[in-house]
Image 1 (tube, rainbow, N blue to C red):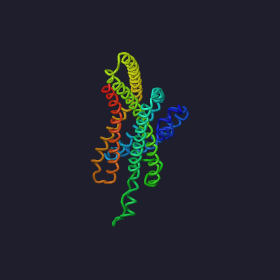
Image 2: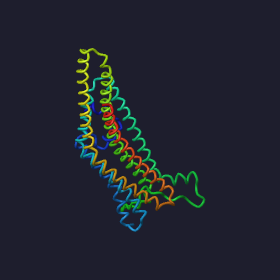
Image 3: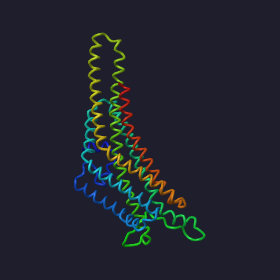
Length: 337
């Protein structure tokens, strides 16, 4: 399994191992990670639900709470689905590795490394983009005191911007405002580990499958060039070359069938979790749009949730674009044939 792990970016391994979601981790680490993550979600969701029950007639509080609660539910469901798909993810990684290790041609190995390097770039880009969005959203509550220090108002100070509206029962939120803000940032970073880890594995497996499809295309293209010279060969050479070409074409077809099996593993592993996530994100984006319409006079809060909604749109685009790469790679095989 160590050889397999080397095919994946360090961000993937670090993020998932931190949460107990790496396929080779023990059950104890998995359940420990699940317990901690569930506690984290409940710690954020519970005060918000208590608060919205006390202010059920306030539309702004209800919409804002709905955005955060739904996002936390999406994140928890993402964690649980990954935990339940442990064996499938491991089988997918093993199937790709088994196909790849049989490649011996220098050009084919070079082609696979090209796709692996592309995966490394995409993983790092996605992780950086998500981290930037999360920090921008989480640090906005610190903007009012910072603006007061740089551009103080003549008639007082700017109002506090809460990280989220909650009723903590045992203490007032205003008394521990900055402590709650820091806790919110820490929680956001943990959510970043979840999304960066899961999506990076998804990206890496897809790019490796695309690389295998590219190898199939290379084999068919190479045989086409050999076959184009058949008319210049003698009958004996033709028969030898024809037999060799037929055998290598058969190998290309076998590799293509192995690629299709990997795609089957990929679909079986991610289809339902991805569908649930996309539907939930679309619902959350709709709530954000309604919320922004109600707070048109609160510039900072509007910007914060604008960042949040924009991040979701880019996340959906990224998901669809990465998935389309598999279809495009398979289509290239058809044209190569």
